[in-house]
Length: 151
Image (cartoon, rainbow, N blue to C red; front, top):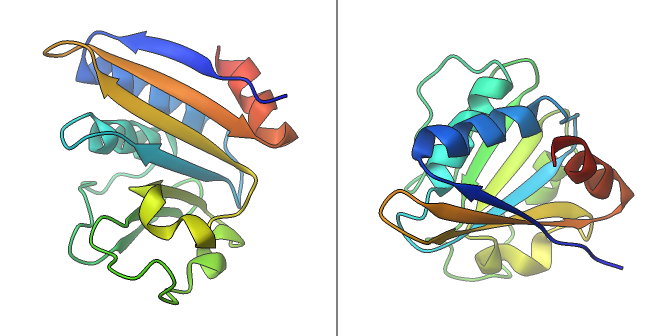
């Protein structure tokens, strides 16, 4: 049975702190997808994940390069699939998903066919000017355990 965990955030900083808590639970090969409208807070969440993974570089959306790589406690791979035009296009994503780092994919619907079944899907929705609700949908025992740890 698939569960959904819900978190209400009142600010970008609160969203980042939640992401930092999640980062503490992550291991090599973990995959997180982030969906939500433009401006929902996907990049803010990603910055919190990066901070929690010990990344010191400035993290921003890889909109024009699709993938940015960062060094931290674990390698951190930040993908933005917004501009992927052909879902079946071979991008070599499985090398990242099976690698030694943590991968975050923004706009996962653009590469849905290439995503592993087991992952943590997070949807971020606006509920006010700074307010957001984050829905965590774990697929697989590992991600269910992670959600239980942070909620």
